Image 1 (cartoon, one colour):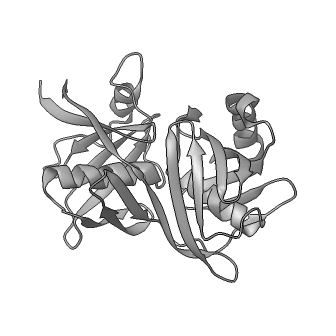
Image 2: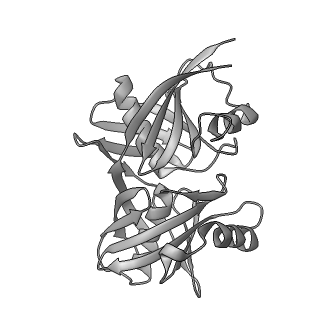
Length: 260
C-alpha cells in the first residue's frame, strides 16, 4: 500500500484536493478513486481534485477533475489555488505561468493571500431572451433574479442544466444586482451536480454577461458569492472580451495522507 500526501485548499469556499504529481505516482485514470476522495461522507471531501504536474516550458501543468471523478473543463478558483500551491512548493514566487485544459494561463500572487488569474479570452457572449450564455473556460448559463436568497438553486439549476444543455450540460448561475458594479451570485455546477459556495469561471461569466447586457458600465466588477468576494476585470472587444482577470483569496486548509 502506497501513501500519497495531499493538500486541501479553498478559494472563496470552492474547495479542492491538490496533489503534487510531478513524479506521476497518482493514477489519474482511476475515476472511481478520484470520486471517492472527493466524496464528503466516505472520502476527504471536495468540489474537485487537482494534480500539479511538470511542464517542459512553463512553471507547471494543471489537471482538474470534478467531484464525479471525470476530467473537466477549466476551473478558475481551482487555478488560483493551484498557483498558491505552486508558490508553497517553491516552484514560483510572485508570478506564474501554467498550462490548463483551455490553454496557457498567467497569474500574480500578492502578500495578502490573493491570487489574480488571467482567464482565457472570450470571443463571444450570446444574449438570449431571459438568459446569457458564454464559455469562460467552462460553459455558463447566466440569468437574473430578484430573489436570489430564496431561489432553489439545486432544483432550478439541475432542471436548466439538463433541459437546455443535454448530456454535456452547463453550469447555471443566478445573479441579483446589488447596485453599481456589485452583483450577488449563486451557482449550480455540473460535475459536482450541486450548488457550490463559489465558482471562478462562473463569476467571470456573470461579470461579462452583466456588462454585455448593460447592467453595469464598469470594467471591473465585484461578485459576492456564498463563499466570499471575487473581482473580475476585463476589456471589451466588438463581440467579446479579452485581458480578463479573476482575483480573490486562495487558502491552504490542511495537509494529509491517503493510502492507495
